[in-house]
Length: 327
Image (cartoon, rainbow, N blue to C red; front, top):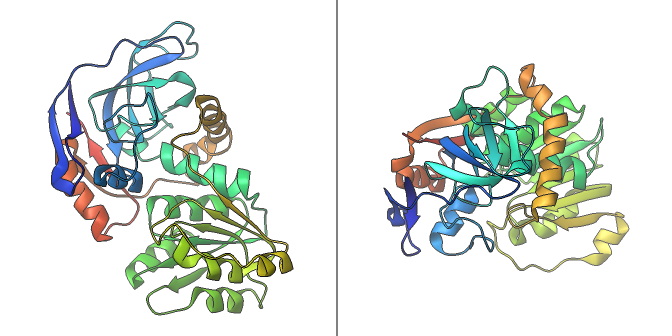
């Protein structure tokens, strides 16, 4: 088969499409997927640069999600058979023509979606559902602040929060991106290059603040994220684009009865990821089937051109997901 390889960490040019050995046959509880498409995530960029190693036992090829057809199933697998159209949450290996995945991390392709579109779903749906709803417990009538509202995760978070009856504030770096967020239902639009998100959220909530903050920035935003929390607010950090170390004012957090959680998805045990996938299938998949939620795809590119796809992601010019098609 062919896969995107990384011989040495570096720039996008480090990604090379070449022939590699086929995966070993699926073991007990595993499924072999013939990949039709994958999608680009920020974690893939970090892996390419040498900052985010795959967990032990995972494929060395990048790619945290894919869609395709089941090629073979291992012992003990029930509910899946060769030929099934699936998408999958991966620990790695999505940038390849075939990948082996635990069966509990598979999802059926939603009705009405093609495989390339479905490839844009597993990582964002699992990330948003597990963090915004399972960890932070967003409730109807609350306000969710999403940093990076025009990203793949951001565009999905806006839609799921609106369906759940919440209000949504987003930050983004251009009027065009904010317009796209508004089209998805965002209520409060904040250009982080020109406006202070703390004052904007307070003005929009009568001084109360955000009940939940979904943050991809990390250290650079920590103090202001605590400042913007409403009483009983919950901050969930899922990215570190703005650094890893910052001072936390515990007094400010205590005064608000607030909480801070930091999570990642890739290295979780299979059983935990399987539970998240099952919850997404129960709660999110019906919304995709009836059209209330949809993936936002910026562009589709051949998987062999993954280097260019990474350049697009690093430029920040995209809205939603960048999909890589195999074959």
